[in-house]
Length: 141
Image (cartoon, rainbow, N blue to C red; front, side, top):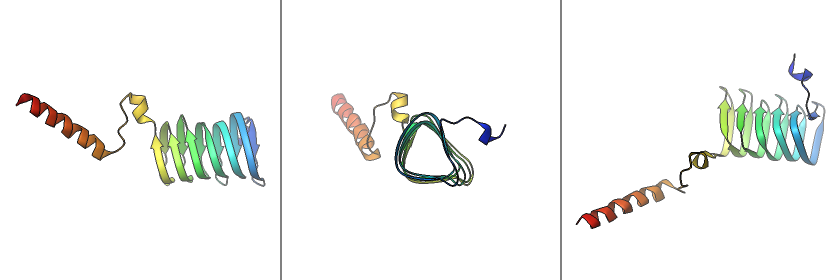
């Protein structure tokens, strides 16, 4: 079974350019053409010649082509060797192949998953640790 035999809830073919779209897809979308707009999807597949520009949100994605602007996922982001992502990227877990390109602000939710308090910077964490040590030393004196 080839990738084109799969069933998709939404498909953008190679000769299609969709601009100004605002899409909400409860299932899988495959893009082999170009979409410019807002896309909310359960699973996104961007084919090797596919391009998606705009605000993209969903659970998971497999990127072989190009994604630009904002990509926000709650689950796994897979970036193939031909995949290129530029912009603000947020994911639950990440898998990349050699040759994949990711440029921009890249974040994950690991602080929340571990149940640890979020510390905004290394300096703040260091200062917090130093203050705790200073307070303990003052109590011991």
